[in-house]
Image 1: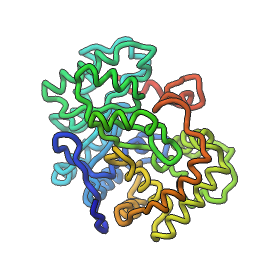
Image 2 (image 1 turned 45 degrees about the horizontal axis):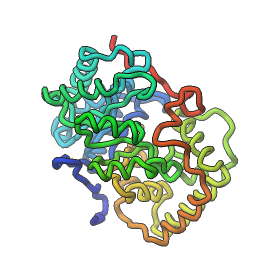
Image 3 (image 1 turned 60 degrees about the vertical axis):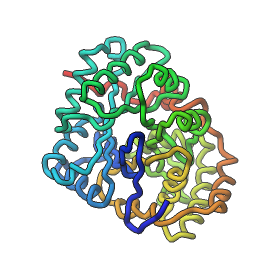
Length: 351
């Protein structure tokens, strides 16, 4: 793929649906990552689109984010016409036993209203407990009905494991994309999920690539943090580092990434991003941002290509690491475990 300076690579999902290979994530605007100025957040969205990042990721349970994107659409109609908006349908855990047609359509209609659109570009479906609480198959079929009615253009999934995704696909509801956590620290998608998706034409829209900011020179040579973190991302991804092999091995990985980044005159996070962008089946990365602070830097991910020697060097560390247990999101779905215990399960109130 041709690399052009300050140009964002693009890719087509199924049926010619074109997106930027960097996606502006919205979770960081939902709270827990510092104060957000709504007016500035809208201006920042315009800057991302002008830079070529024309795909936004949000969710019905990211507090206030759909409304922010809707405000951007009103304030910058010309730029908004270039944007694809990916939202999610995530019923609250406490509502899983009560999800019916009325509930599903109410949530979808609310997203339409918040985003100021007549049809949702892509709705990514998640169900907190597919194995313990029935209903996710019927819910997927209801989303398919709303797609037929024209309220949804395309459907995808987020954080299902391979077996659960296969069950969904077998219903006959087409899922064009999957949103997994995927990074140098968390390669669970490579076990079963990505091979299955490659066989079924499902693209990966990946998050967690920068481990909440841990892939940074700011953390090189620093002692292992023991105090409470300043934001939810660091809390989440420190648990991933622990499972990967611990702080000492993570420091070894940072040293290797620094060697590679220095070779190309780029920053360490860009090497972590380029590594995932180049993996089979990966269509795009979702990069969380509360501002435009790293925007110009992130665009440089398209200015360089890594060699086999670079990958081999990184593999010397990955071979020492522990691949996280289970399939995608199995750890996070366990409410009694370290990962599941920090989740917020009920943020999608309908009243």
